[in-house]
Image (cartoon, rainbow, N blue to C red; front, side):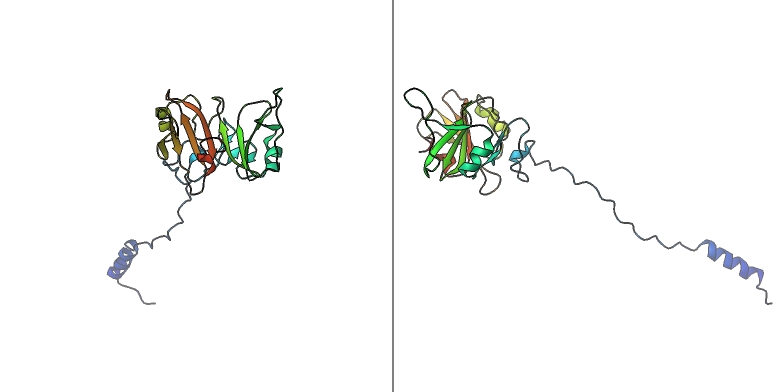
Length: 213
């Protein structure tokens, strides 16, 4: 058996101690939850990513009201609303006149037990709804009785101030949709500077200045 010199053994031992270990294979990065987009407003019903999510404190939505969606046919409107609907007209005794659901023109329906909302029907479909009560919150948080400044705080990006068609002391805050073809929210402010009513719908019906006119 051949023996190595002592010096050779020492060199082999030092080489083994100084050997650099091979690097470990990189591990897969851990999955992380996506960060919340700070640009999305607190009210999800006005967010670009989710424009029709309902509020928790109101049946009013950008895509409809309660169980009724904008664009729904008259039969769906009556069945989906959840309570009987009647026309706005009354006879000499004050009793509501029945609405003609076969009418392709424009008319309003409202709940038998409340003044709001007023549902605009045109072409036998729901195209808009109007609210005059402070008890119902609009998509985005606006309501009857608010001032223009309060509205502009709620709708800072897409709210356009436009003049009223007839009263030069009145004006509207018209909230443009986040997505093309979406619904518009229009707040009508009177001469006192406060919201007297608001409506939600798509063009052109949301811009009708005289109800169905």
